[in-house]
Image (cartoon, rainbow, N blue to C red; front, side, top):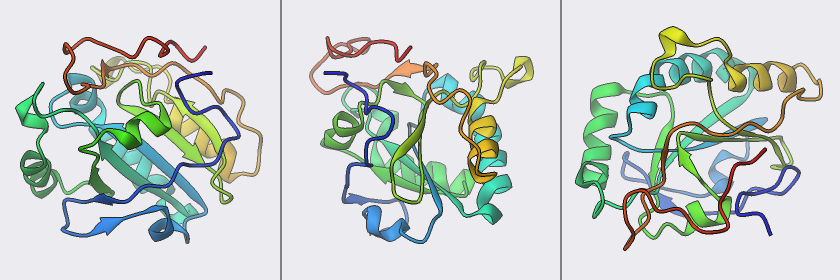
Length: 193
């Protein structure tokens, strides 16, 4: 069985605390026509390098019923800067247009099969997975970007078209799993394509 959630599968539910002091589950986002769930963190250079492009994409598609939800599943034991306290600080500084959830148990990362930070999952109104993979082709340095796969997928999806490239390999640091070396990945985890 594939580690990462396959296309067409329903979004696994969750109940996670956010930096705004509230708890969120899928039910909280039921009004969104399209839901983008992405795994991210505080320290990864691929996340930091592409955050502003992700922000622009989120802002561009918000009027079209697209909502973004960020989840940090990284172990603070591996990177102390990935702690919940640092998440709160980062949201205060950056004011990103999404809720930022903390998956301390890493159960949600396992349920979705998150491989890297950032790793994007796009769900339709029925919460079936229609796109999975990277945001852009050069997340560490978006000045060299040639493709914004997430923008392309969302553009096609909100226009009612079939997404032409629904699966891409996420580019970034691997998720930092508890009680493992910083570069460890689950044995069944592999590239998506």
